[in-house]
Length: 150
Image 1 (cartoon, rainbow, N blue to C red):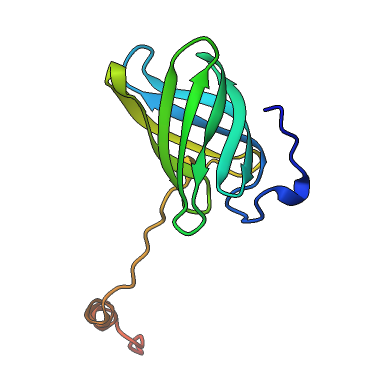
Image 2 (cartoon, rainbow, N blue to C red):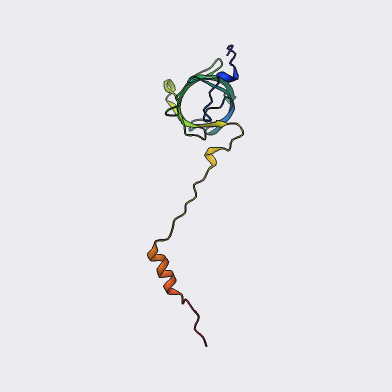
């Protein structure tokens, strides 16, 4: 990361802001669960670079992204330890995808997003539906339109 990057050289697409990102990765083996990570990412001309930390340790990031599809791929290298392959997609609220350590047959999901943005994994879909016209008319016909006069 010795290369200095001018702010004007950084990606201008709002899906890929350079700076602090946060997120998590999920695994089933010990310790199972959702594990937080902090990242400092730089997006420039289709190349992702950066570093970060999580409970495993400090790591570096090197990879690529595509503006047309939102596809992202990178290698996460833990300092003095193993590497992890990440493949994901940025749909506008963060990068979602799958991580894998192929030689150990380990994999899981992940999600990262720019720090300060809401956690996209907490969004809940709200379901609403219009009643069919026949249901509305049945409901109306069950109740008198006018009260009878005494």
